[in-house]
Amino acid sequence: MSKIVTSFSEYQDAYKQSVENPEQFWSAIAEEFTWRRKWDKTLEWDFNKPEVKWFQGGKLNITENCLDRHLPERANQTAIIWEPNDPNDATVKLTYQELFDKVCQFANVLKNNGAKKGDRICIYMPMVPELAIAVLACARIGAVHSVVFAGFSSSSLAGRINDASCNIVLTSDGGFRGGKTIGLKSIVDEALEQCPSVEKSIVLQRTGEEVSMKEGRDVWWHDELAKASNNCPAEEMDAEDLLFILYTSGSTGKPKGMVHTCGGYMVYTNYTFRTAFQYKEQEIYWCTADVGWITGHSYIVYGPLSTGATTLMFEGVPSYPDMGRFWHVVEKHKVNIFYTAPTAIRALEKADLSFVNKYDLSSLRVLGTVGEPINEEAWHWYDEHIGKGNCPIIDTWWQTETGGFMISPIADVTKTKPAFATLPLPGIQPAVMDADGKELDGNGLEGRLCVKFPWPSMARTIYGDHERFKNTYFSTFPGKYFTGDGCKRDEDGYYRITGRVDDVIIVSGHNLGTAEIENAIDEHENVCETAVVGYPHDIKGSSIYAYVTCYHDPENDDTLRKEILDLVSRTIGPIAKPEKIQFVSGLPKTRSGKIMRRILRKIAEKDTSNLGDTSTLLDPGVVEDIMQGVL
Ligand code: PRX
Image 1: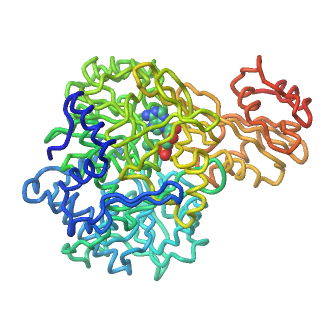
Image 2: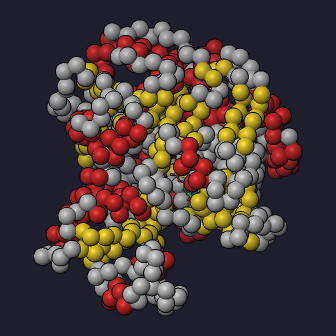
């Protein structure tokens, strides 16, 4: 493993080479992997179609790169450390050999239950080792995994299962999260009433709670394992065959099933994991995300395991049993690299420092953040109290769509700057665009962030809707991938991501589409119309503010609010619940009927001194009314 930059001048050389000769750059990196057959063509692309193909003709299986190839040297090295929700329960450690055996055995369970290459398999599970095993087992047999975060509701789950016509669902009886138990199987049961494509559900026992098992459809994980051998040769995949689908919210319409493929995704997640964190042999790496998000896919499972790293999976939450849990886990497992979200840092920062100071954090070498902009205060707290001023903070900017880190410091190589994602990694060519669609040259400027050249792990399409893929990402600025984010590029050429410029709201690091939440609220029989906006929140980054018009005045505002919250929870999931719901007589609309969200955003932010031009509104009076009732 040689191609990793370890100094700033090496970074500059690598970056230059990656721009001047991207194919040579990426093929040299790709050669370090196990391929069944080498590729014929490194890259073919056209952002107008859009079409991107990396390593065409190459044959591989990503699990041979995450497991088999490590066995000669690392059979007894720990691959996964699992820290359970309850600190009094036993930690589980799986060596590479054990993980390999378990993946192969579960791959046979999938096959015994009818799974074949190309099938879509939905995974709706808590953060237990079997979740990672299930993901890898799908990849082993060439089935496409579609992991759905286990906090989503039954109707969100059903929508995702149906969108990809999954034939198998992997789940558990329930899951533990802090002091709560969540009955996952009953959520799956409800979802499956609307999912005709599902033939089998394989159910892991985790909480031991009683669940109903449907004859002919539902089978127990442990019963199936008892019947399966652990010998399962890997399926040979084309570099551009689908590896997985992962849903992310858009500014309009239903969630988008982002499609990632085998070869480029493997090369890029591995390269960026090793580069940005400067992972060293034997280090313990902990990413606190859930495998249900892209961060978990790329930087709990595939990136670390393809590197031969030791990756820690945590089942619980940062506040259970108390606000010191993260730091306890760092001390207990002597974590060297710790990667989390700004929202968690802000929440922990509010707790007493004694929760931090009672633990030995001296094992830490690198800290990371992801998911939303990190404010300077949180950055400094993280640096001072967790890193003790000795650990670089890797603020990684990227997206579900990008598959891997895009703009990020490289630990101990890139000089960091609070709240800046700093510089593009090798292979990434950002472009900052002005409102007229012109690329801005030079430094000290601000605009919309695009990427103008393909990188290996970019999403290839939206499952079943290539037109939407084109419209969403490649039409705003023709010939470029548009990220949906705004950014600044300062005098040093450093990037600071300023947040979404579309109707996506990031709440505690989770993307939520305004349209999705509005549609859910509109389902209430007394709700006529809804407009949802984001507003700043100390801990969550952003929170949701819903303006709702009713057919008739509610008898009791609080009862209606509660009904709306329940409805959103049931339709999308608890993470999408609005923090504030204001009942209004009307929404500010243009003469053409478009809701002026800009005005609603300002009111929610309590920044009403300059509402801008309201003269184009159909009924300027509603703005006054809304301001009077603001919460
Ligand atoms: O707005 C950016 C924000 O999160 C969005 C992507 O969300 P998602 O697809 O859920 O992936 C999150 C994990 C990669 C981006 O468009 N975002 C992500 N990382 C950062 C960020 N904003 C600022 N700084 C970051 N480091």
